[in-house]
Length: 567
Image (cartoon, rainbow, N blue to C red; front, top):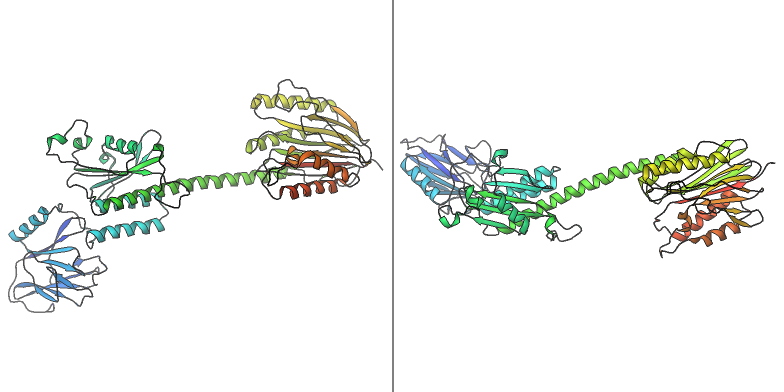
């Protein structure tokens, strides 16, 4: 019968009592008439269920009675379990839309009969009236919907707080608990990250009173799930130490959040040490006991694993971001350090040079420099700072700044090394030091040098003879009062000086064998008549071929000086 059908009597007012999957109930007056029921927003009763048609059914008045009519729905309309096209409604009729296991709509005439139905619903364990919420399709389907919503949040959300809120809301839907907290362990206490009620509302800070004794027990014992139901009427359950009784709670559920073992293919594998408990999921109820039957316990434990995974991924993401920031800073430091190396070495005139420094990490602790003091003098420095990383790189830059100042007086060289030794001891306490080879080469072939415990440079004469410039002092910055004696040598035209760091001789291949000083000597001696560039390139190529791309633990620095003499 359509909305224009004449009526022969005015019926008593009626209502529909709606029971949602969480057990909440609400009353909707059957008005106006005809009363439309369906999924579209323009219906008088909106049912958010995919099995309900856009306009599924309606209630009209005919001959003084309320009549339910199916409006060509796809999945049908059921009254008291039977699928019908049309039905004169009677008190207590149970209406289901879409399937027999749909949510419940109970029809009742207002007055005493409505009161009786409401009391009957309440007697079945359904809680008091709550504000209108989206309607579900049965308890199990509501849980499935909550889990699917959580899955969508996990896939699409970039906010860890949004995901954790969804975890708590899903846990409340599964268990039927009234409050849910997600607590994270801090250095000395627990921090409340999420606090929600079953309506999806955030709780105020002064609402966050929870039984700390139970929480500590769950964290300390690391039980997979701690559940307690409490009957306030039973006197034996009321104990002074029972904080559940103190807070007038019916149920408490604690699920520890345990850090997932990194690198495991099985997401349920978790660390067993107590200090890896990162927090817990806590829920409680005052009116009704929480429901952990029918697989709810397993679902709740799965939620805890998801929350633990989210927290662990967030921690790893923070570490990865910090690592990227550090790598960017190191890249910048490497760029700066490389820019401090000599840009152009002398390639003509009475002195020629070739050099390079390859850092084993982003930044290196080696440095070299070949600088013109004046027309008749050049200085050369190779330094190797102890240790690796940024600290060594900073100290290498300090040495470069201290030794780059031009001087052609041997006495000034020794004085400068003394001052540098005192400065490093004062600021590093001997924990950071450096080996240094520092020399002055004069146009007449005279060379003054200080070898502060550095690898002995090789002097290769034009006739193939080899001589080594042995250390003349301790490392800079290691011992207070160390002396740095200035030594002298004389070069003839065609002589070369090969200065290197121990990263050359201690370069390792994949079999963990060292390149060694013997190989270095053989390469240099076999090319005694070659140019400084040819010797430098030959050594570099030999080291690269020997190591076969294996990562190195030390910087590789090599400088070859060639004295050509005056024309």
